[in-house]
Length: 73
Picture 1 (spheres, rainbow, N blue to C red):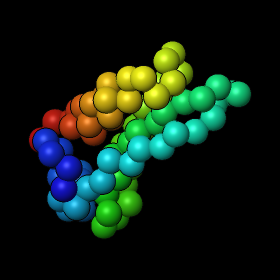
Picture 2 (cartoon, rainbow, N blue to C red):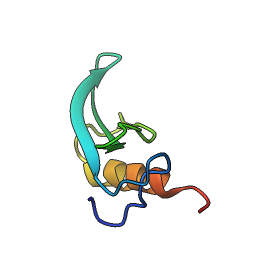
Picture 3 (cartoon, rainbow, N blue to C red):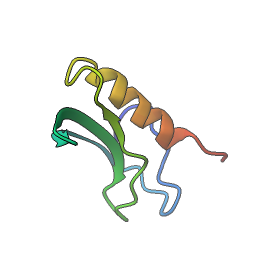
């Protein structure tokens, strides 16, 4: 399990993965990140960075983690 992530809201699994990818979006280099459950394959919001490609990937990853955890228990 990735550090500081709540369990999956659908199946309760703690087997989670932060998926990170370099890609092209509207002809610009981009970096995306999202959290995915390895059991039921639920996925959190995809966060994309277009402003400074690859330079602030840690911010994109942190935002993806924050969005996964953004729910009431």
